[in-house]
Image (tube, one colour):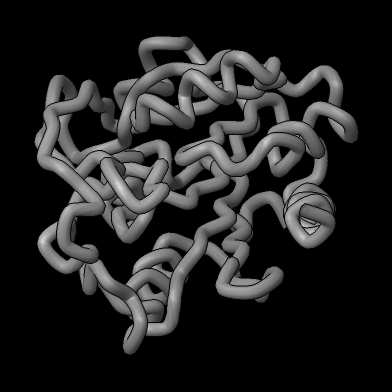
Length: 203
């Protein structure tokens, strides 16, 4: 857990003061949202977690912000994905479930949102927003769902496994890096397989 605290501290050092922290695919108790709450107590924290058991667990352990049972997708409404089922799986894959261990996920429809719709509906468009995403291979989908707000988001922390072990096989690290660099973001390594992208307009 200490490595997540350090990773979040590094992220916030690069983003500077932010108004809103959007936590896509919420981590363990005491992880990134808790660190944001400790270091930036005035920051609004919003967590998006579609997996049933993890959502209930986070609610019962006082998630330090508003927690919503939503997935991030390129559409608003509902989407069919792969819900953790057996073998201790407690996450949700928007894509690539056919590559998962047999019996560990089941197909299920969940409520979903685009991030640009989400930001506009909550009147956050004039706020300094940072996004932390650990969403099992659909990070590129999340980025594309930002629409025009990709130009104004302060930064992203993304988990991106090496291409040869990425089960979903939905994108490559290079594709994501090239896409964000084309949108004026600068890449920094974080801990493990996490990478930080900071909007150059805030540097």
